[in-house]
Length: 268
Image (cartoon, rainbow, N blue to C red; front, top):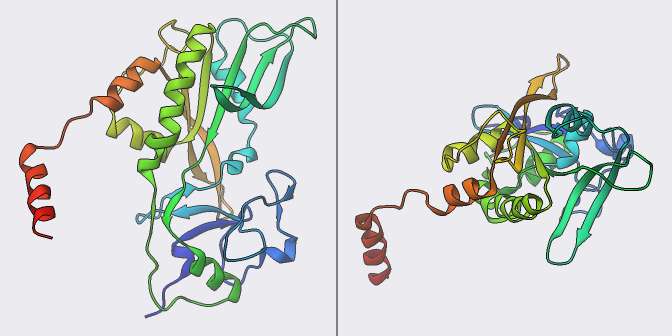
């Protein structure tokens, strides 16, 4: 049985995946960053420009944060998430780092006089990674071939907690003490997973002093040309302590289920 590899991969190099497409014909130029794609695979010396994959139901899930660069998401942060009066002279700092804090992707700072920093917002941009691989599907697309077998891969939802959400909690705590907020730009598929798995308190009143983490969730809509375009779906806020408690105190699995695991381990 032949398997269409585009059932797994939705977009390559910013274009709808199609059998026979070769990104080398476009010099691997990413349309969103205006330069060579930065993604790499250990299986090749060339860029690996897979932007978006498909869930089993066909829904697109972006696996590269640069995919959000199609839209001016930083302008939308100012428009929808800036606390209080809009900035007079907003400037963008990229990859701001500090010891014991880590780094943030962007900081939008209001420098009304051109020098001194007034209000600011930090912005974290996040896509999801996968378990398994779609390399065979990618190679089949480039070769203009079908797959012999369906390849197994999954979205690494658990890593969202392990890495991204835990970092947001820590950074939300720091921003609380700095009198400002941090904005998480994220796809709706990932945000909905977090909300369903850890039902934390959230509000549309992002100006509240009880909000120091703001989620800007984007859905991927059909762009009419076989691809997708990120469209702002929700803007919701929470406090780092709400998110921390929801993640930490999720419903525990039953004792009986854990005893089954113990018994299975003892029988090995």
